[in-house]
Image 1: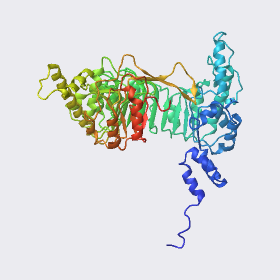
Image 2: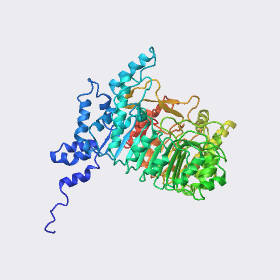
Image 3: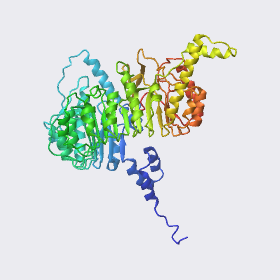
Image 4: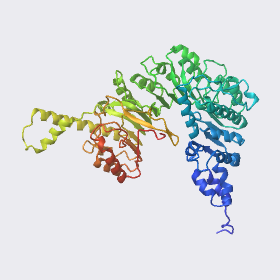
Length: 631
């Protein structure tokens, strides 16, 4: 032992400062109350980030002007928080007007990120009452009203910004919108060291921006900006990219058709919340050679000849790694002449992730042909709509995912919540996708006994040995044998994917939507309804998922963390749950036992009891609902 062995390497203040960034706000608040010394060291970490969508902020801000529920946390309390701790704030994510006003009035000038979300929709208790009165009055009064008037907080806003005049929004609220919008722009101007700026559609609703140059100038005054979300449709994005030499991530609702000769290599991630033509997309890939991730709403049907595409790209493939088509459009999937297949995919050979809504046999063939480094194929879906696929191209979809399973040797993720794979196709061809870690699709066309046939089969156990079977009984026995054979071969094929961490056999037949009947906000969160799609029953041609059918063959899937069987007519019961609890020790999430809808079968009515039983067996397993976690 050395003489100075007891000398501490760090003192308590240094230790607190090191761990402070890893503590959650509630934990930091508790630590700040330990002593004055701890308070002094940890206060900067406590107030480094304010996100009013988290913790208690939404509840406080929804009622701060309600004397019955404010409990002392009124507007003065909010403003005091910013006045006292504003110098420590580095990251603001705000969806409530009062916090934007408070941040500006407290002269917060050390921000590194400023994100404005749905500020237009978040109304306090008093503002909701005002809006209800306005709606009632508008039904009987003349809808015309004088334009919104209010003070101009800065001379630079003269002729540039204009108050909004949205119908059915109270005059007083529109005037407050006008003030808040100006305060946001002042706040953005003041924080010249911003690394991230996100301006949502809700901010756009607070006032009108009459000049494209204004937003260009504001953003150009942020030379360190790395990330920008701009929903104002202002100006040419190429100009923004050129002026912001450190910009790496851009989200915009507009992309111009200009073709600048300047090649800009700094941008890595681009999201365009609108459709563009294939020619524009190719020009974009050529002019942004550093682009790694691109998300667009959809491609138009404008055709580009192969020779023209080669000229645009200068015979130089893009380095793009991720391509997403976010809209539910058919323009990016139709046949061999589709834009993606023949015009875009040949120029993105390094693609590792592709995501779009319609996946057909032809698009699957094109993806596998042109993208030899592909790791992830995902079917687009949003949090509000998940519809069953049916109709004239259902057969194509059966074959589409089967192609990925057969030929996708490099794939790690294959996710299609609306895709079906024919059980016989699974058995007929070997799989090369042994590296898969995530598989989400519905396995259909499985031969199953009807209830009447199951009764006949059960009755055979009472027959004497050697008794001759009736023709109907022989058919049932043969069908049962075929079904068992088919089940076991499918299980064995799934069991070969030993790297799987997520296996979701769900077929999602429901629409999750915002409730039309009740738009009320509870703690800042909308209500959701879950409805069955009319005329579409549970998928009955699916795996039974019983031990009798061969579920035990899935024992090699020891890495499984998630298992789903939502929307299919499975026969999972207590013995199957007991088996899963023992053999899948890493299981964390299960989808299929949540009671999201009215019972559509006798088995549905057993969900609550089975879920409770599984919770007794494995209390660590979370039962995931079809309703989004953010709902």
